[in-house]
Length: 404
Image (cartoon, rainbow, N blue to C red; front, side):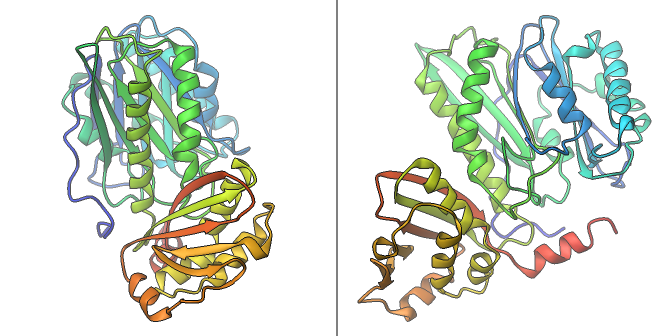
């Protein structure tokens, strides 16, 4: 598949996280001649937290992971991910597959089943041929390495056109703390918790309850603020593992919180940049809302509107479509206070077209690959931001051909 025109130029150099090892392999579940399974082995005492989709048709892997978050990882833990089959909507077969994978992997790594976290991504409704995964486990164990995070990022991809990685290195009281994260996601992106599949690793020391609280808070400000197509996946999972190997307690560190947020936001925006068929990266800023909830409603209504997204794809400064999206959002508004900008260009002010609006200038701005839409509701002091992409013929082609 052709690499997204919005993709970064290269995969970043991610710092090694002591206490984490990766391995990848080929199962052939859907993809031929490519790695499609990833194992991350975590050292004893690693803290594991997670945030998952709130879809009511979530997969067996998601349900299993949710039941395990907060259980003991004193002996260590492991994460196993397969691409090509979502293991969702397959009845009792789904949990049976998860059980077999966890039992086999636990036996091989000498870990309890309760410390094995699985994720599956791909086609919904097809029974997972889990034997193809368990057949790879010995090979995965034998090839574990702390150097293989880039391969892990590639192995979890489905319709992605590039692997996604991000990191941060910070100094706390003279000691170094590292964060490395990978993600996959391209379509079926309108997170209601986190996003597609995301795995973040740090050598920081932090308790499970503190990490869980921090993860949920940061998710609401990062992954829950992106959308590609308004569709929430059955498989969305975000798992964060803190090995504690740096010996630095970050439970009360605002510096760590900000660094973790920057990694999460970078990964979230990379997912948008890889949106299926995307040619424009779009930031929607809402100010002057009566509440944060209203600001988010307006931003998401705008970002999810097919009419807005196709206008962006066609480089058409049709600001009337923004007015439409604001109106359908359900937020408290007063038309006579509404103002809209495309980039720095004021196009509508106080409920009508701006006096100095020149469509020629705005049309030129619309040719850029990174665009911003700003909306001021004039109702209060609350604000919000959402990131999205345009909607092109490429999205239709990818999804029309997804199973063929």
